[in-house]
Image 1 (tube, rainbow, N blue to C red):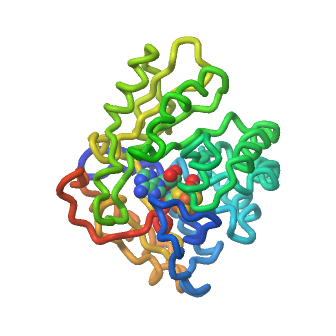
Image 2 (cartoon, helix red, strand yellow; image 1 turned 180 degrees about the horizontal axis):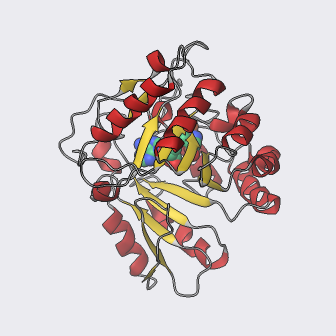
Length: 326
Ligand code: SAM
Ligand code: SF4
């Protein structure tokens, strides 16, 4: 089956959040004090998450990315992933993590059938890393990246949220990393999800990031893989890893958007930046596969053509990225 939205986009990608808890407190994602924890009843059970995944795959979803919060902090995640990976028709199972627990978990994740890891890593400087993550240990994440490859994973993709005045001077260091290591590095524009006063000062456009790199290195375009999503991909000639730019704010990747999202509390969204969400709980408790199919179809049918965020005007209700899954 193929899922196509009213704007002609093929929808084949589900981002499924399994928790809103996290063992880090990144300043662009969570308030310092953390978030009010959801009760156990509010959180979808693994059975419910599985039903959503099975239903979505039967409708035409081919790729699922597990996200959070930090997905690796949820107890039982490895068994859940092992069940997910056997869904007939699911072609690609990926996971996004902050990498803190990878040293101990990478081998089990690989055995469970996860095919690809994305690791968020915003600085290669221990002090800056700790400041951005409010206490995270860079060494553990770097060790986790190595362990993942030893476990059999392709070099994990590294996601870097670039913030002016915080880590933007490291753009070149990350770009240079791709010459030596096979990890694709993707620069993500800072998104104003928590609109604290003066948030505009952090914004740095994908074009500026590209200019900074091309001022030092030539870049050649790279063909995107089937499920690579809305990044523009390049390579420094001869480099092992690629460089991607995700212009979520300044650019207009909406025309290529192939995804829907479901949060760990069962809220489905067609667009990260839209306030519109659909509560799936009534079709999960008790399970109603037919009703769930209709609801997911309505998310696809109601997927907005484009978001309206920009650096100036943007009128969404505040949300925490950790609750939606990025
Ligand atoms: N904890 C995992 C992690 O950090 O990779 C998964 C969840 S996290 C919410 C998913 C992605 O969202 C991460 O790559 C993170 O950098 C990104 N993200 C969170 N807040 C963001 C923001 N304000 N702007 C841009 N990206 C953001
Ligand atoms: Fe946690 Fe990921 Fe959000 Fe950082 S970006 S606070 S690691 S959920």
